[in-house]
Image (tube, rainbow, N blue to C red; front, side, top):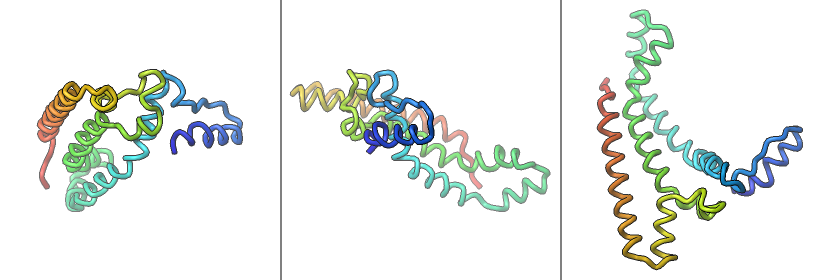
Length: 169
């Protein structure tokens, strides 16, 4: 879908509006990661927003009322009530986005096949090509185990660092 969007739909909108924006994201090594970022964010933004919405709905209204009574303006209420109370949601989203971005495979296969050149090859795509297409099963298995360990370490470090900022209502 995004390949068609970048090659057909957006250039046509470009012509209608009379602008000159280059939407050939998947065709150039310098812009392919930007195109994949746009497509991946479009795919997952709703999921992460639902987590933030659930976090926002779980903040007790009494905290906002107390902050208002204490004289906090909307900006202070945002930074001193909303952000600390959203810390668990922020933790979940940051860990999920980080580990998910290292595992992107389906978007790459369907849109660029790791190209142009090797500009958009990810770790998981390289692992698959090594193990299945290259028939180096042991090396591919070692790559996948290493990736799992690295993802686990990254997630643990993020959770440990972000849990310090969480507060309870």
